[in-house]
Amino acid sequence: MLRKYLLLPLLASYGAAVTISVAKSGGNVTTSLQYGAMEEEINHCGEGGLYAELIRNRAFQGSTKYPSSLDAWSAVGRSSLSLQTLADPLSTALPNSVNVKGTGIVGLANEGFWGIDVRPQKYTGSFYVKGSYTGSFTASLLSSTGEVLATTKVASKSVANEWVQHEFILTPKKKAADSNNTFSLTFDGSKTSSGSLDFNLISLFPPTWNDRPNGMRRDLMQALADLGPKFLRFPGGNNLEGDTIEGRWKWNETIGPLKDRPGRATTWQYGETLGLGLVEYMQWCDDLGMEPILAVWAGLALNGEVVPEADLDFYVQDALNEIEFLTGSVDTEYGALRAKIGHPDPWKIRYVEVGNEDHLSDGLSSYRAYRFSAFYNAITAKYPDIQVLASTINMTIPGTAGGDYHLYDTPDNMVTQFDMFDNFSPDHPILLGEIAATEPNNAGNINWDDTHFSMYPWWIGTIGEAVFLLGAERNADKIIGTTYAPFLMNLDSYQWSPTLLSFNSNPDQTARSTSWHLYSLFNHNHMTNTLPATSSDAFGPLYYATGVDNKTNSHIFKAAVYNSTAEVPVSLTFEGVGRGTKADLTILTAPDPFAMNEVGGANIVNSKTTQIKAGKKGEFSFKLPNLSIAVLATQ
Ligand SMILES: *[C@@H]1O[C@H](CO)[C@@H](O)[C@H](O)[C@H]1NC(C)=O
Ligand SMILES: *[C@@H]1O[C@H](CO)[C@@H](O)[C@H](O)[C@H]1NC(C)=O
Ligand SMILES: *[C@@H]1O[C@H](CO)[C@@H](O)[C@H](O)[C@H]1NC(C)=O
Ligand SMILES: *[C@@H]1O[C@H](CO)[C@@H](O)[C@H](O)[C@H]1NC(C)=O
Ligand SMILES: *[C@@H]1O[C@H](CO)[C@@H](O)[C@H](O)[C@H]1NC(C)=O
Ligand SMILES: *[C@@H]1O[C@H](CO)[C@@H](O)[C@H](O)[C@H]1NC(C)=O
Ligand SMILES: *[C@@H]1O[C@H](CO)[C@@H](O)[C@H](O)[C@H]1NC(C)=O
Image 1 (cartoon, rainbow, N blue to C red):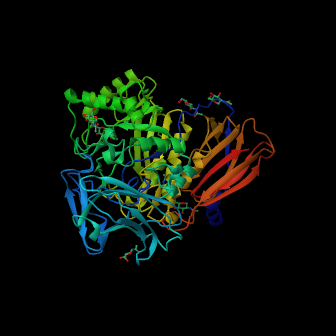
Image 2: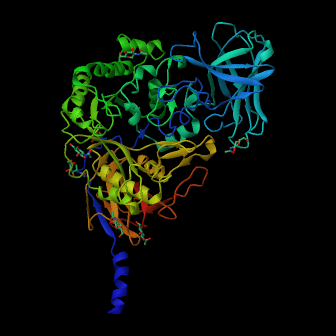
């Protein structure tokens, strides 16, 4: 008896294989775009992150929430810096500037977004200056010990009473020891006529992705390109909503020359320049082949202010203007505006989301009563091809609209929602616009006051996400797409962790998280059609989705193992796939459930691809370890 008792767990663990038979038809067409990206200004995702500008507080933009300041700037030489609001500013959008006063070689230095990466490449800079000056300017990159890493002289064109832009190039000869470097701009105070000069919009860019002016940081774009995102949800998120109605994200203040962009207070404890604006978002989509999912402001601010029904039309019209700006021909009013700022070719917009999480901030009753329908009716009437999405699923979704579901939860709770979409009503397509495992199982429920649940995605959390994602993959005819959120985090200043990618000013230290590896693997194995499967076992601890890429006829099995006491043996057949067929089996594992990929650290995700062959009956036999993610794709 004793002996039998001892054997039982072993038998349970290493018992017969889970047999899975996949039919050759009867599945659904994948309408889901599958895995995308989500961006809003949080954690310096854009500002000081993807947006490659190296100078922090480049134009002294303030807001009522964050008054204009000299943050990130310091005086060089025997000089004093003072913030000014001049009667003749650089532009209405940029009313503040800095006055640098002193004798001898004087100037100002900027510490960047907690450092500046310096390596042998071309840095493109510019600044505006006002005041009569007959000398030259010196622009430099300096190490923390004062070593000059690159320097150049810029002949002065500066005159009294006029803002004149100067441009320069810096080309360091070697890579700096670290990214703890600064930028400085100096001049000879004795050659000014008034003893001081005014500066504004001081900018410096490294080479950008696709060499776009005002473009994106290359290492972070590379990490995104390697992930292969299929869509981008932007510009938020809470950041779209704003803290107040007046503080909302206003699309038409984010376009055109940088000197005409006023900046604004983000909803995440810092100001943004709006250098990364609507057009830059669209170019980002173009550059990575992402489908834009444009969110429009919907009459709710985070402080609970709601636009009354009688006043809503202005905002509905503004959303229509924004869509016309992006998609209209040059004969339309806003299409012409787009052409005027250098983009005659219209973009295509297939998805528009109305607001963000409108079930929060007491927004749900007005959203249900009149806000959503006002936007939905107006957009659908003018643009019948656009799929309009509600920002929640907590309402009766009308007509052809879709919804957006967000899930931040524990790994266990992600797993228990595996079947969420199997019997899902309402019968409307759903965007999974923000998904992440955020808190360990032993912490119980989510504590929303603690937005640093975990520093980075951790392995068991990633497995929990994988199981939830598989539930969505099985129902890829009901899902618009899925994305992790938030997406990026600057480790030197962040508001919410974990995120998919973490970084600092040194591109060599960017961390692609454990969840990045999950999304990348699933993204690179796209099923155009699901195929129904039958199995000897119920789901759990093995969870999976099955289908085919009908462009290549590759049959695909995606799986995750959660909470198993042992390896799970699998015997998998695809109807019509015979003996000897080769398949690639990729298995992701990690050293322990709490392993993470950290900034500056090594990648702990072990990815192993082996080639296996179907046996006599066309079966693929393999074992999947506890806490693993796998994809099998026939060749
Ligand atoms: C960067 O250099 C400054 C000045 O030497 C120093 O105070 C600071 O601690 C350094 N920071 C890092 C991250 O090394
Ligand atoms: C932006 O559009 C709104 C609504 O049409 C308008 O009131 C506002 O003046 C515009 N702002 C700019 C900077 O064009
Ligand atoms: C849905 O709305 C009801 C109020 O109508 C609220 O009690 C509930 O918490 C909401 N659920 C979600 C998921 O927002
Ligand atoms: C995983 O196992 C733990 C411990 O047995 C259990 O408490 C938990 O409910 C399991 N989670 C799931 C999703 O099955
Ligand atoms: C296809 O979709 C239908 C309806 O949503 C569903 O009942 C069926 O299970 C799906 N088939 C597969 C293989 O997922
Ligand atoms: C793949 O499936 C889609 C959706 O059913 C269909 O439109 C397309 O023609 C199929 N392509 C091939 C090569 O079978
Ligand atoms: C499998 O993972 C779970 C965590 O979900 C852990 O509790 C369990 O001990 C693991 N089993 C084995 C055999 O490693």
